[in-house]
Image 1 (cartoon, one colour):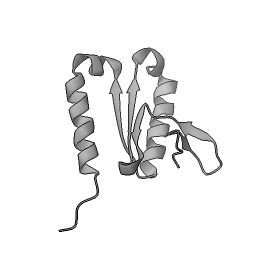
Image 2 (cartoon, helix red, strand yellow):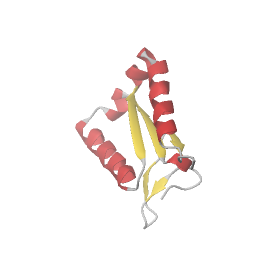
Image 3 (cartoon, helix red, strand yellow):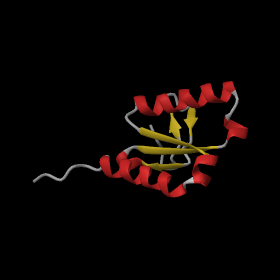
Length: 93
């Protein structure tokens, strides 16, 4: 479950993760990770568990490394916007 503060908690109330950006209405979460903090094998495994949890809960999850954001922020923004658009409820005709 995601609270108003955009924290993902297990049913027990334990904190799972806090996305850097989240759009609960379309269940889209974005993580912006830096290699210095997220580059160790242990942290990579923990990050994967967090993403898997959100995905099992029906969230789409995008993760960008800092250098990717710095190299091409427009591409990252386009990808986020495209996925946000795809997850919008379809209008009934």
